[in-house]
Amino acid sequence: MDKNVIRDDMAFRKKCVSYGIDWSDFNVYKDIIILNSPKKDIFVLLDDNYNTIGIHKLEYGKSIEEYAKNYQNLYNYVDDNYGLDLPYPFQNFTIKQIVDIADRVTFDGYKVFVNDKLVIDEIMGKPDNIYISLLAYFKFLGMQIEQYFLNAYQMKMLGFDYPEVHSYVKNIVLNINECINMSIDKKTRPFPIDITDYLGLDRNNIDKWKTELHKIIQLLINEKGYKIVGGIEHYKKIETIDIDEKDLADLSLNLLKILEVSKDEIGKSKLLSEAIDLQSWLEQDLGETKKLKLTNPAVHN
Image 1: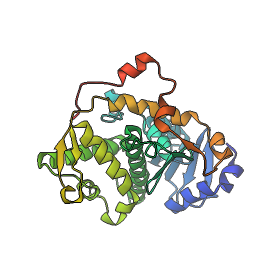
Image 2: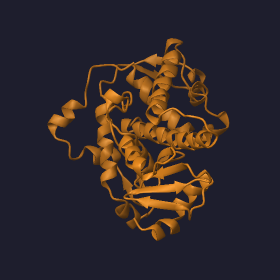
Image 3: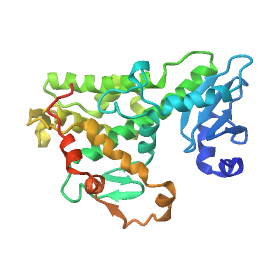
Image 4: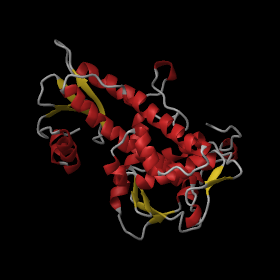
């Protein structure tokens, strides 16, 4: 990676500003960007997409390069024997894959963009598209991971330890599920503010992820055999439906196809008229064996 190219990239500078770090004060080790903080022993590590992969407080006599690759491996690794795994439906994903997919999707009001192309599934009569709801979950987790590293940086600068990122994301997923189960037990509809409060997030920031949480709620209550009752007078109620037997973990793997589109391809055209039928595009190359694996009678609570 060329330091001059990195330094002149406004996306890189924006990342440095978020940490309060001088964008000219960094080094590159292989494919890892090492930001020097105002404290000589604390470093912020970025990948080649300028996403944070670690915050490290260096021990005396050590070099940051000794640790940089370890952070990259943890960021891009799945191993349930060492706690480097996430709950259903993300058990097959690394933190890096979640963040990279989140970077490729944008929710803008009622519009969804993937790789800068407008998703037209809802326009084509697929308003409950599972893939869009899964992308909303990826996007929400991506935002929370970004905030995690900002919080971890502050704690390190103040001399405190911070939980490991896998534990953090794992507990977000488990607590979202727990919050929705509590609402179902009460036979009431969960709302984004309920999840925001249950996770202890700042209510003032709810507009940042309200759309995503609406779709996450719809995804999870449908999977558990419920739907929101129609009509304004019943907007707080839910009712039972046939359980959707599609396995969200298998379906999520299809989203990796989004990352097969290179960043150069994305930048070639940004015409507003460009659109994509997401479900058809994701499943167009699936064989019959793969399609059969997308159904699973197990219900995940």
